[in-house]
Length: 166
Figure 1: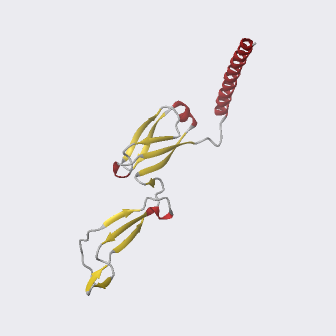
Figure 2: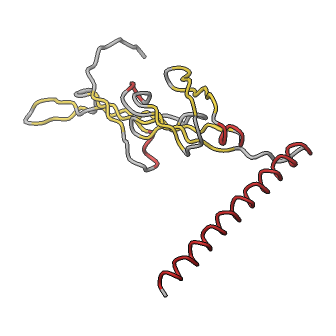
Figure 3: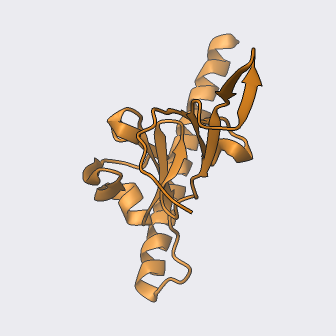
């Protein structure tokens, strides 16, 4: 078998649907497929090559957009944090001022056209030490007190409204 290097113009298409075929890239190479006769002339059909792109362990592609998950701690969610987000184009430093369920980085997707959507996931501790448990109990008590004060204000306002309606 012999091989020869040939420059072949081709047309590349990407299937962007949400089917199982969405990771396929199709390449059409005109006039390099099967031989056939048409009007007593020998012609060649187009040659189609399908390339399957495997899923990446970190990056997920949706069209020109990239989707990733970034895990943060409870304290980062409440107090904010400096995050180092891994993108296709390197590390981006992002300041998270308070918890959001996602961060959108414009022009950080495929070919710097699409978006890089970072889903923020709070990682809860599976085990608490005594100090952590004590601090969380203090926060819980504070929240209860704050809720009771708000309920008391609502009840007082409700009584004032009743007097006005009489």
